[in-house]
Image (cartoon, rainbow, N blue to C red):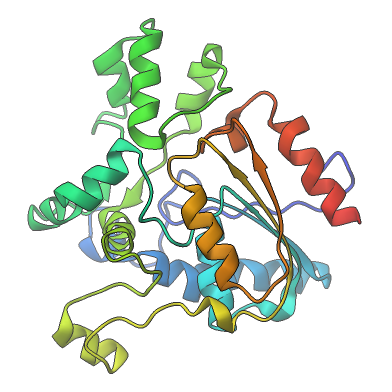
Length: 287
């Protein structure tokens, strides 16, 4: 998109490599990790878009990948940041997740791994050791390609077109740290087949939301937008049943394309993503 002349702004989710700082809290404070989708949709994404608009004074084409689409849908459903938005592109779009089939996702949903981690007072979810070494390097070493592919499958399911000769580059940037609460929120949505705020239990829900159950993010409240959804038939995190349910929940006339072989990571890491996905995005924005 930069090559095509667009002014490109890339948002960094909390606690990722480029967003580890905080004005008052330390990395070791439990409050530092006290966030999930709700805070990203209510605070982070609107702040990013407000910054971009304040500098460019141009309405923004929003492109969200994976949870980046979930953040936008949650924010838009509450009327946040809509005045800044021109067109919207969702890659591997996520709102509902109950048909996800990646092993880690199933572990969250069925084995309640999130609740085990929370009970053990674990706040940070990372694939690196305290010394900064990737766990996969300890398990697989540097040369066992099949083991490394199994490691990727654990988190993201099947992918068609990853170039594993780029392993050193992939490990430099992926995966990023997140909060256990963020994973717990995802698990709640998967177990309950909904797209809703974080569930703190009935007493705390009453205090926070004024009701015993968390309110849903009402997708029908999002006004009609010019939207393009690109999903993958092999995507284990953005399953086609969930994507279809999402599209049917919106009032927008969504332009939709399903790549017959892409998995979840292919959208950002496949060597062929530029021709199979990004060209479509640019054509949509320029039409």
